[in-house]
Image (cartoon, rainbow, N blue to C red; front, side, top):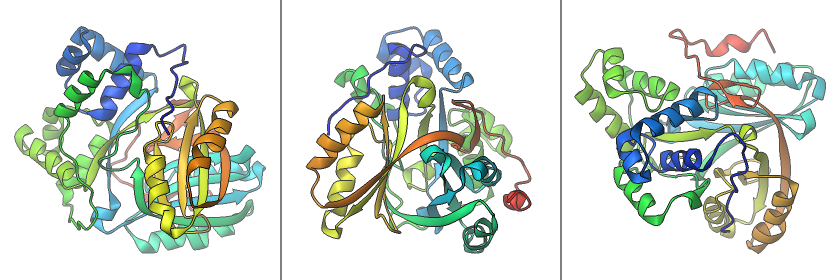
Length: 354
């Protein structure tokens, strides 16, 4: 599974792709270090990054790994009538504990990610609120059991061929060591949560700015962030506006025999077309997102790459129609919008809308 994603966007050029790939490897690499590695001017790197972020093509964010804090991470599929999909999606997107919402399958399905530290609120949304909504036909929640790609310690390989091996090695040397939160149970205090929230809006915000926000010093804030990353309780991620750069996204749901689940998941995790793959509960036991230029790419992936993997007994492909929320922010057209995190979060703000 060694295919590469071609750079076909008329908006982003090779240098943009190099910067994007570099950030996937080392999300907080200094502009000066990155410029030296890419052999371009520091001002050029900074200007290119800020343009891509401003125009909604990419964002660097921090995310808490709920397994490390005793929470649960759910992927929820809501089958609904197409005329109600937009209303349902926007109501769900209003919740702070929902990080992304997408409409799939020509409008017949709304999928979302529910990050649930509180079981009562999860139960309320999944078992009471959604079924009462008239357009809802079926709700299928799936808890994430294990993430193969797209979580702490994992780097998406989009455009991995735009950097040399020497450049890749130099970038990895600038990235902090990251471990999985498996088996770790950490208690986050108010400062930790504040830092995760601020870095969730901008993962490259200066430590001096974070220190002022937290009422602390840059040194203490730096050590806090390094501890969060080093323990696997939180991780940085680069979000891409795939549709805006000419790529299509498709949800893949697989049924795999238990003895092959780990090997299939690991194989998917090495494919650069797959930014996310995880073992889940529910009717399917493995899910992934597949990124490609069009139907031909998807067909090749299924008939050539997926066909080589033993143990798959069934699969479902559901094409993405439209993103409503992504990485904690509402989506404007095909572009990512800066997230607006209110000081007074109200998770239940969507009750009346549904």
